[in-house]
Length: 569
Image 1 (cartoon, rainbow, N blue to C red):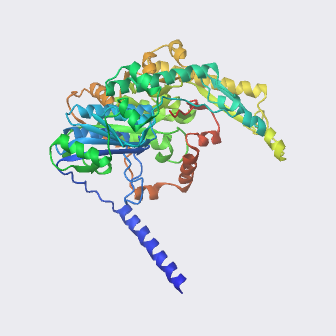
Image 2: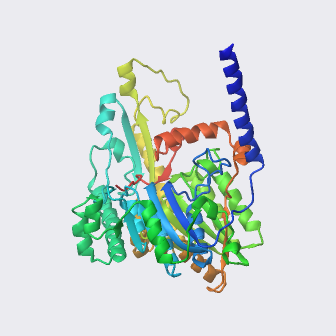
Image 3: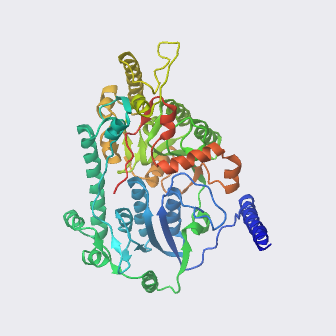
């Protein structure tokens, strides 16, 4: 009897919890939080900082509630600089999983905030180079007395599967245009090609140089001093202090005590990130009559039906562009791209709609961490392109890959018998490799796609085919390198993109503008009523496999895809 009652009670509790979640999902609170006088904005940044607004979870039991986007961080620091109720910012970054472009954006936002005369204090918890990079924008950097600063330089690790595939009896054939388009090398080689080593060293030199120069600027040291210090890393807290990498070793409450003394304005009211991001700019003292759209495209480019959540899909993304085009209140458009590329046909469809919008309204392209291959292709509208010095871009090339599993099938006793009509009916069969005629046919198709890619870039960049082809070849560039190569127009983040767009839209530089983000942050109810189960399953698989574009390989076809996913360690 007792077990029965426990079961009934458990069922009631679970039902009540679900009911509460659904009530919050259907009727979310729209009231903005109150900002107290003498507030300190606690910028608590953890994990990923997405470009596209994620689903808003309405109850605190969900850790994903109100995760800030890059635009949110930009807006909060912009508002806090003029908000008389906010006296300081405390930066608390931890376990960040972002690229170098986003790091450069947030660091620049912190530097801009400091120009208001308000201080930024950074409190670090077992920081890596990412968190420390941001902290160097602060007035003072704190760590706990027994903590650890994992600052020791940078490295790239490239993984190759050829030897493993040989043992399994799997053969992969890759056709690519551009000598640097080495996406398939991971399947066909056991070590990097000379071209890959050239590019990797070039990228690493640029990113490491930025790390050293920003630490030097923030800590008032020379680049030579910083390089020598990093060569002795990582550091225990006392070593970080003695090397001048941090200012004080304190516990968090002690840090706030020192901030209170420095501010000389009474008791500190801590303002959470997720609260202040809901406070409108007008409450902070910023008003704007002009609206710019910020259209965010993030993820792999494909024709999948997963919708906005799964990447950049032509149908849903083009609807956003059309919505912006038809809105008379929108006076200009910033298209924010964070994508390594994807399917050729999908990127073509987006490229078409981007060009249509560009004819109707002033447009600027703002590149995030990655805008390469198809992500670069969709930007070819002739609009000004703004990239971070650390953006990964270019990769102007095309690749096609086909696995042959015949050897694996033999090992496990699987046989296939093919009956077909048509000369190339089984060109994509996984039971055999491509024959010379098939290989040439696909090579011709890849080359044609490549020529089309280069031609569109040449037209958009007002250069000849030969000029672009020299800097194409599938090579990945940093934003700073791409500017020198003529592939982007300017270096900077959202601030610079807005300045360029103001100029195009004939709006005075001194005028404030409001960014309207597309797509908007969806409520849990919108998420539950619009997202298909298939898309949910795909997103779980995607989360498990990380950056691998599994859905693209599954469907086959030609790809405008960056050759690799870079994670800096």
